[in-house]
Length: 190
Image 1: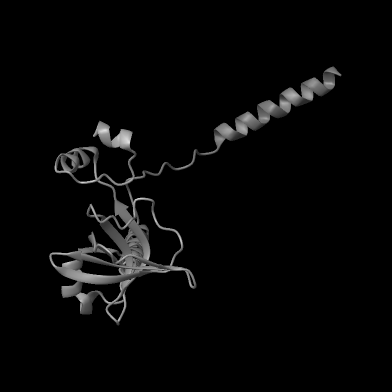
Image 2 (image 1 turned 180 degrees about the vertical axis):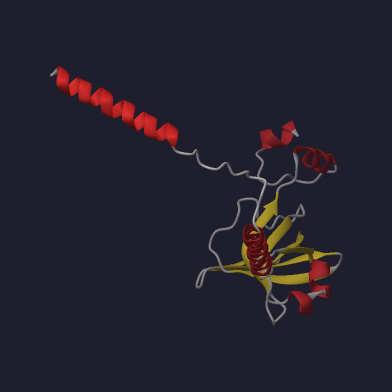
């Protein structure tokens, strides 16, 4: 077995000698670039900028129709030609006595106003927020989201009724207003 070990040692020594005799690989510097690599870098940069601009344009034009404009009733009626058919959020106060519910098909109809301008609203849903009540003793602030129909009626897809804050309720109670959705004990605490 010692012959095998001797042969392996000799082969290893021969390969090391051969490796030392060959010239080492030429060293290249990263700082030196050829004209073709510079052109490739510029081409890559330009194509990335074009793709980025295209994506940005696509995003900006896609969201234009999805934008929700928020207006008061008076502003919406003034700009009805411009905003007709667009997704809009309108704010106003529920006109007392205007809230009507129909069961077949299930829908609510009511009127909201702001600065003396009124807007009829149609909400084709069966469920409304708990705070959305026609209270003859107190104003109910309403925000409706949807679109303005060509008939001038607002087709709401979502409605929200603003509940007065604790401090507003205290001020109203001092003026003698009834507090909606409150029991007698809760009203005494205000």
